[in-house]
Image 1 (spheres, rainbow, N blue to C red):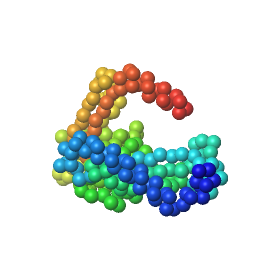
Image 2: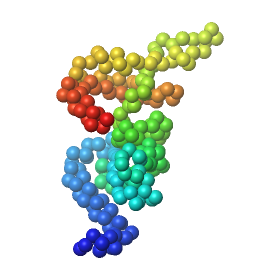
Image 3: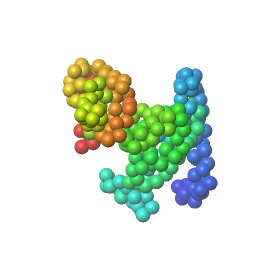
Image 4: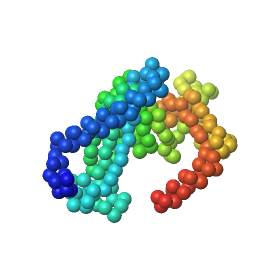
Amino acid sequence: MSPKGLNQRFNGSAVQFLQQVLANLLTLRIHSTQEILHPYSTTFKRIRILDSTTFQPPDQFASHYQGSGGSSHTAGVKIQLEYDLLSGKFLHVYVGEGRENDKTFGSTSLLTIQPKDLYIRDLGYFDLHDLQKMNDEGAYYVSRLKLNSRIYRKNDEPEFFRNGTVKKGTLFIQLDTEELMNQLQPGQTLEISEAYIGLYQKLPARVISHRLTEVQTEKRLKEQAKKE
């Protein structure tokens, strides 16, 4: 079949067909490892993994799919995919412009949140308000922290006014993350089981810090150099 003939046949029905083929293939692959995931089903109702990918179509599509401006191409397409790792079912499949923000879509997908859901997302979806909503709804999350995030612990000896009212500014103590990391040797991990993150809302969380090894650090620096 020629490229022209393929383009003529690529209509809405063809798109749905290819989406279903992809869904079936991934479902078969996920189910092949179901015995590994089975222990988690007693703790979590769903394990929701959300990620996105982008690609650049020809610039003539920029009027419909505008790019993010980070490359020489003016057009860009972003695909958002969320699926449940326990059942292998797709929860969201969305195709939009390359300039669209991951965090915005991540907030939209919370409309289907349920208790005992586990959300796994990368740093591009990080939003404290979303994490607070997950916590309020009885759901769980695994996420990296942004560099400017603040970490606190409860103050065992807060200060009080003369009338006995506690001074709110003394309820929590901010931790010096740089100092904590300097105490670790390369490859060591530190877990703070009862921590709080955020500036105002003080979201309860379990924070795990890991100091990179020399090999991991060198790899990160090389990747950063390529991006720059």
